[in-house]
Amino acid sequence: MSDITNEIKKRRTFAIISHPDAGKTTLTEKFLLYGGAINQAGSVKGKATAKHAVSDWMEIEKERGISVTSSVLQFNYGGFCINILDTPGHQDFSEDTYRTLMAADSAVMVIDASKGVEAQTRKLFKVCVMRHIPIFTFINKMDRDAMDTFELLDDIEKELGIATCPVNWPIGSGKAFKGVYDRQKKKWSCSPIPKKEQRWARYRRSRKRIRCFPK
Image (cartoon, rainbow, N blue to C red; front, side, top):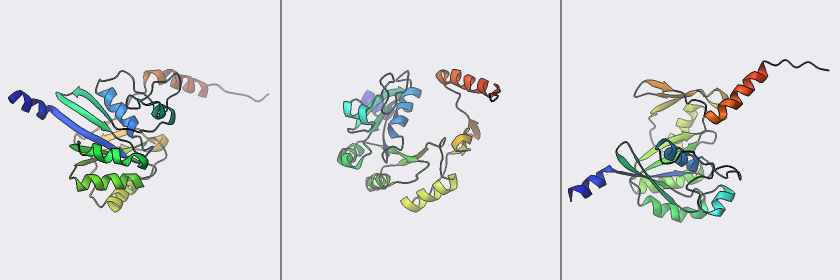
């Protein structure tokens, strides 16, 4: 019995919810990558030569870049057994999402930084509240043209009726985005350029040093 109890204590099961195209599946891939479950993160609606997202296993998901069914992905990290429930974001598949949330201990709510709280996010948030599921909000796509950080926090509080308490604070946004500041640890971090992108970055920098004269 003690072995079963220890196994239960080690498990962490959470669902990822969002409006379509907020970056839910991409975030799932990053969890798998940094958790050591995969060596390369796949892409949503990947090209013929690119790797598809692990959770997008159906052909229609690979072709259209949408999640049609819920997927459970498990890996070990930090002494815990992590279960990620990747749910469909489109409203046509909401029933599957509602059923999946019954198995979740908590939820990560993904919000597009350029759009704020969207319709499907509100619906799924209400389901989590009704079932007393703790929610951690992740604001995605800060490296694109995004709303002001304070506007995003106000939007979350106004639309969802909850108080916000940022754990990480973005350093810049859009093209000026540099990384995040951990308010608890009082440290900031910037992600290095992926190796496959470093060659392209060096090429672009070298092009800036080349002077072009008109004929």
